[in-house]
Image 1: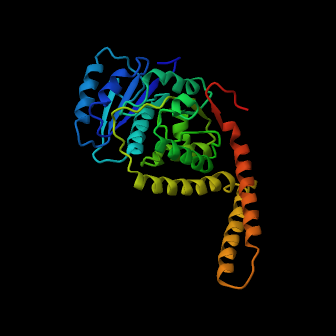
Image 2: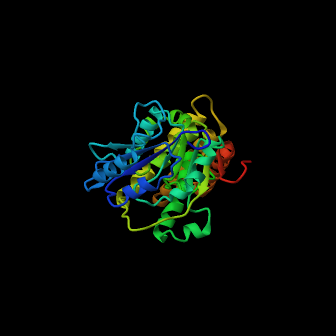
Image 3: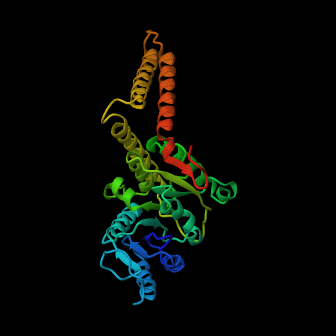
Length: 327
């Protein structure tokens, strides 16, 4: 336990033989239960999980939760590959069923430093956040070690995720080092969480609609001998499309379902003006009819900026950085 709260760690693993065992062994002793989810690996990952679980699951292990298991390390194996989001979803579901109060995630590739897990869970344990996430972009010496192509992609996804999720102060949305409360798991309907690599972006949108507080925690970027399983040719279009759909769903759920909010009104006006201006501009290229396309587009951009500003103000109380006082 940590400050009277039960702590669980979900470890998603796909082809992490040679890494996942060390992750299990280095998780701090105050963690009550470790859910290691093998996502249908094709190497020796499952055997390594079982070997290291057996070493830790002693008869004297402290019991927590009410899920009917006495094991500190709970090995779970998927029959088919569901993606990292699917593995984390499985771990969340099992941990929540066991009554674990705060659940964090540590990748099976060893990129997440176990020595800073207290920094990740502390805001949730002390009820300053419902969800915390690492952010490698907050400190210069952290993102300096990030490969340039990852840094550029991360910045782009940061801004897209801010627009889609409504958490306008967050950064590094792809960072999987997170902690979540049991209450947030229920409120955000984790059962419907996206199962591809964009699961973390999807979860942020769901948390925002549920009015959950999110805190960014400075974390270092760690890159070793592990190989990335991300195929960027499919990753970028899938996540971009998912973010656009989630953005539309969030605006409807938060600003249209009960009454017409100014944020939704401004976005609708912006969309109408930008569409009209673009169509008018294209028509002017093939006809002699002069349409005020630029003025209409400028009008649309003005309302788009206004919509974003109002959205940011409406959600400002839901975001902060560890060590900072929300304003």
